[in-house]
Length: 348
Image 1: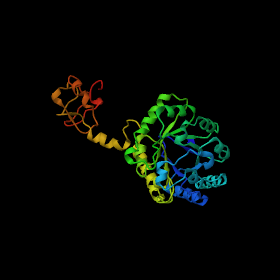
Image 2 (image 1 turned 90 degrees about the vertical axis):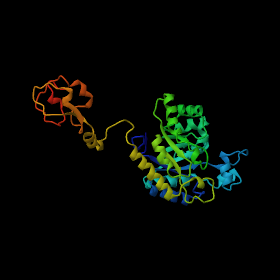
Image 3 (image 1 turned 135 degrees about the vertical axis):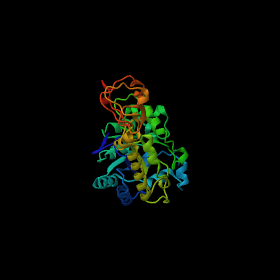
Image 4 (image 1 turned 180 degrees about the vertical axis):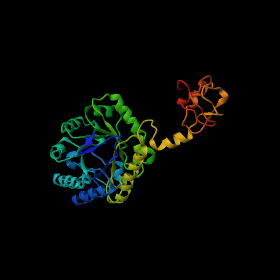
């Protein structure tokens, strides 16, 4: 998969999205400051959310528990104070691109999409609650941009139905803010990959992790579990008033998150059994091979007593020990010398 000029996948370094979300607190300037912090922290992209509170929420809406715990009292009033308009979004996109960052947006309804989708976004995001919003999925898919789907609070059937419609990346996600470490369910990452494999889609879908823990090492764990795209909330202050700050990382911790994810990826290596070049010396020195127990002359017939197994591994494999007795030597072999194929008539 490619976003802009960046290739993404297991064979490439982690692709890390700094989720600004609503941590700009409704301020365009603060949003731009968070874009800059994302750049300095080592992120590859920033993501914002485009919505209009009165269009998104009906009178029946209520606060989520984590929002109430953050001191909010009215869901519409809360979101109304966290909106960025289309002009502000355009500024975010321009500034991100000027810093060589990708700009990604979460869009929550077709009405919002029609206002914002023509901005120069590098990818579109569908939030976990909208994985069942088929009209929105179809609308966004028609835009022809890379699409990222979060799967929080969705069961296997809901995920499968959404991915059959669209999506280039599926993010394992736990919809709790912050997610306790013992509920992070990192094992959900390979499970999601297995589910995708059963769908027999006509396209590849990458697996990632939308991380709502307040930890900075979960990205590294997710790398080992198979994630290649990562989304983590970035804030200017974890103690700020607002629904998402407590589940976010400040710039210093976000930088550690990025560093640890990249370190884990560099340690991971190819997902196959290989012998690395760095192992070749020890492989040769420490392995054993068939070795002569005495001076052996050309034409002699080998006996079992003429042979033993010793280091190094530069000679014939120990597995041939019982096959050599009765064979004739093609040349002299001094005592305590590893035998090679050229030492035995007809080779070995």
